[in-house]
Image 1 (tube, rainbow, N blue to C red):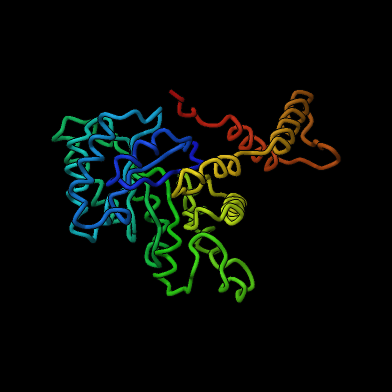
Image 2: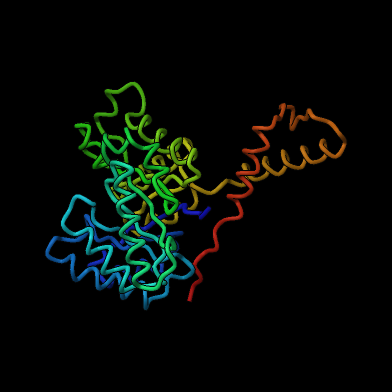
Length: 307
């Protein structure tokens, strides 16, 4: 499973921002053909995606772009033109506003046809799906199992709030409406996404904090998402990447505790004992699994090289 603590969104219409994004320390990044590109600029932006995927240095990351939703007149050209033009270099496609498993099944069929016609390995190009509407959340378990191409589920908080008519003035951070609700207003949808992702063996990515100047709001949003089980967070500005990478990585204390737990378990297993304690706390099988998850995450990704 990929390590994706941070995923940078880059407008495909700006070659300058594409080059800057590729030089960043984000674990993943995608070139956006959807919300970040005006309708009259989408055709030209596809050419930028093809050029970036085929010609630019992604520094070890899988080249990735976000297509337009399937209910728009842009999606089929986003798939056919980019896949044919980028060829075998393309790694991932981010699919917005997925509402039914049939959405991904349709895309899978179209992709397979283009792959075969272009001489590409069928199934090579992977997908990541955004859950951004009430209907998408209702169908999330079927969506998560719709195709073997799927690698991750992403939460889209802005569009989701609009879908359920939830008042919101600040995407990704708390606003005055949160003070009126006895809890976290997005807890249900966020945890639902994590559960569906884990049950299907997928990653779970949290959405962005729109105010990229709000450093404290970003930190709180990252920690909340990680506490629920998300793997990482969207960044809409390079200045958000460092915090996301830090906060979705285990702390030194977490790693030290995990090493103690795994070490004590291995010693007990070698001695034939089934019961262990660490620093006065009983440790069971679930503790071992959590500790090993921490150590696996602490190994980190193969970070993009500098140069």
